[in-house]
Length: 387
Picture 1 (cartoon, rainbow, N blue to C red):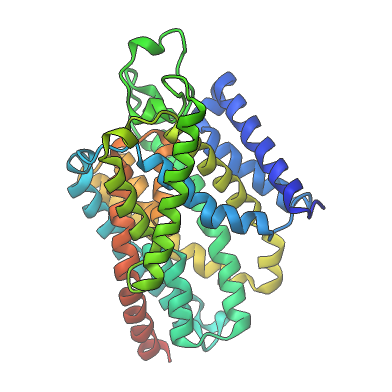
Picture 2: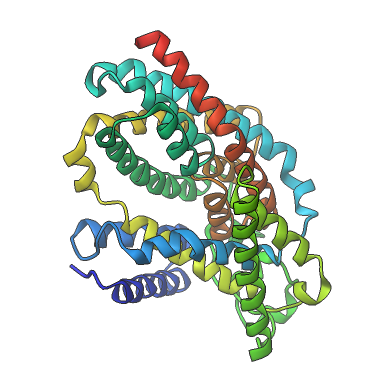
C-alpha cells in the first residue's frame, strides 16, 4: 500500500490525467465525465489496497485544496447567473431537505432494533449532514454526545454514501435528462473544446473550465495564486473572528466581491486551474471510501445512511420532475444537501452547469445554516418516538 503523502498525491494526479484523457478520447468516458471517472478509479484503488483510506494528502485536498479550487472557479462566475436558476434551486433544495428528514425518520423506524438505543442520535446527525454537509454531522453528534464507536461507524458511512451520491448525481442528468444536441458539453461533462474552433466560441465559464482562452503569463499565474490564497486565508481569519458564519460563506463572499474588480476578473486560467483542483478533490473523495472499514464497524449504520439518502433521492428527483424542475438544478441542489456547498460547486463545474454555480453555493450555505436546526428537531422527535 502506498502511504507516503507525496506518492499519494502523484497517484491522484495520474488518476485525474487518465480520467481527462479518457473523457477527451473515448465516447463512453466522455458521457461519464472526468469527475465521475476519477471518483470510480479512486474507489477502486483504495478498496484494492493500493491507496489508504486516510492520508494527510486527502485532508489537504478536502480542506484548503478544494477551497483554492472554489476560489479560482468563482472568480469567473457572473453574478447574473443567480437570476437564471435561483428560485428553482431553492425549491429543489427545499424538496431535498424534506426528503432527507423523511429518510432519516424512515430509516430510524426500520433499523432501531439493529442500530441500538442511540438510533435517535443518528437520525439527527444524518438529517443534518444530508441537509447541508459534514459540518452539521459533527456539530449534532457533539450536541447529542453520540458514543465514539457509533460516531466512527456513522462517519465512515457518511463518507462512502456522500462519495457514491456524487456519482449518482453526476449520472442521473444523463440517464433521466433530455439530451441537448446544441449544447452537449453542458450535459455530458467537461470535455475540452476543439481548439480549432475555440476562437469562434463565446467566452463562458463552461469553456474556461477546460481552456485558458488566451495564454497565461507568469504574472497572471502569480496574481491568481495571490488572489486564491489570500481569499482562503481571509476567509479562515474571518471565520475565527466571527465563528457563527461558516468559512465557506466568508470565502464565497470575498471571492465574489473580488471577482467584480475588472483587473481580477480578466485574469485568464483561474477556472481551468480551479477545475483541476476540484477533480483532484473528487478523486481523493473516492479514495477515502474504504468499504472494508464500514463493514467491520457495523452494516446497520451503513443501511441507515443508504435509506436516508435513497428517500431523499426519490423525493427530490421524483417530486422535482413532477413540478417540472430541470435535472441539472435538481442534481446540484441534491449535492448541496448531501455534500454541502463545495460538493455542489464540484458537481456544477464537472458537468458544465455554469449558471448553477452561484445558486448551488447559495443553497449549500442555506444547508449549513438550517441543517443543525432541522437535525436537532428530527433527533428530538425520534427520541420521543422510539426512545
